[in-house]
Image 1 (spheres, rainbow, N blue to C red):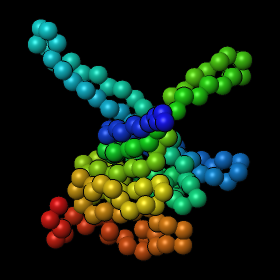
Image 2 (tube, helix red, strand yellow):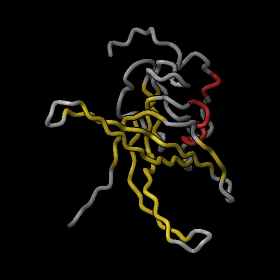
Image 3 (cartoon, rainbow, N blue to C red):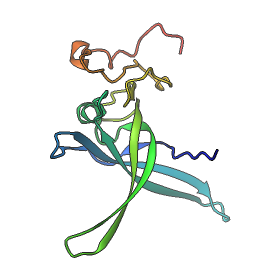
Length: 169
């Protein structure tokens, strides 16, 4: 049996606030650009740096409100861990030109501390399928996307801000 895998893992910073909209069917989708950078020394010893921009798309699904969480808690400059799959699309624009797009369809997201925006130094682990978290955040409290009928973050206003806990990790 032949198997394949389409998996992308990125850690980067948001270039702008996420854009959230609703489809005609009522589904919510958030899009944002995530910047990843790498640096190296060239042959002459001069430091070089290159930044890549990744278009990320986050959908609300049957068991998750991940797009709503992005809208509420993620801001420009925040550092995020995202995991998902890469998708290529093509379409015809108004001038009948073929356009191409490469997107990361985000299935899991962890808010990492250190950003100036909504991350606030804490981290939250959000899984779009509301499964138990597989990874602990880099620092701070851990939170999961609320399941349908579950409690919302407003019920625990200081849950993401509390950095002083007794956890050994």
